Image (cartoon, rainbow, N blue to C red):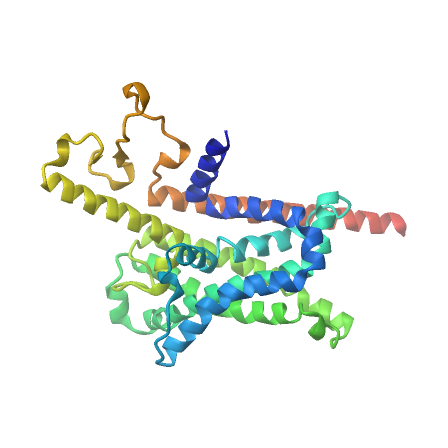
Length: 345
């Protein structure tokens, strides 16, 4: 049963990583709310360590100093890649913070989340800034796409490449706004600001949420229209290797190369070899070793391969589901608050 549950979570993370991460982080935030409130500094340090592991070597390379790359360490490298990917930590934490303002504060679970809203805001900053440091390297090429006509000629689909590059440029504006909101979440900054001024500044978070939706949607739509990417057109970029989609594609390519090597050595008779299905890598099936009694082990959820385009459609549907439901809940709450104010008068 436990293996089946883990298998199912792995499949969900492959198909819809944002929804899976959002569900897991919401549950953990509620479960650890008291711990986060009491030991906030410890959590800040834990989240800041991966940020330093990625940021320091990256900034060193920008300055011409070659430093040790922690991504080369087998297990740690996978953790850092997930940390950098916005859909794993940073983006889901921002969505949790966003939803707090739309849900009923009398609900016991919402109360627990509201009690650590400031702490979650600060924690979200470390993975978001790490992701932004990687992404910002693509901004010059994104700007060049709109300036240089020759750069647009290399795109498979100009509209798709333009949408992708727009998402990178928009990301810079998002980063500037996020840093402003993030810094003012710290107590030592908030105490120096007037309460009215601080509240007015925090209202810009609604603009940030709208930009997040547009940014994430443009990445998916641009990738569908122009598979080669926008700012990454023509050459590989470091950020591409950090995404879950690129990692899945690399695994599929590796399996395809292994298949070609084995078939070239006459390994078709081997029962445990990888065999192609209609030439589609995403539909590749792996024949497992026979178990007791000569039976083949049953397949789990994680054995289901989903194509890149299907995942993109799921990502887009997830974005509309998340932000559409938030908008509905926020407007409904505002309507109820207005009705309550009228009754008081």
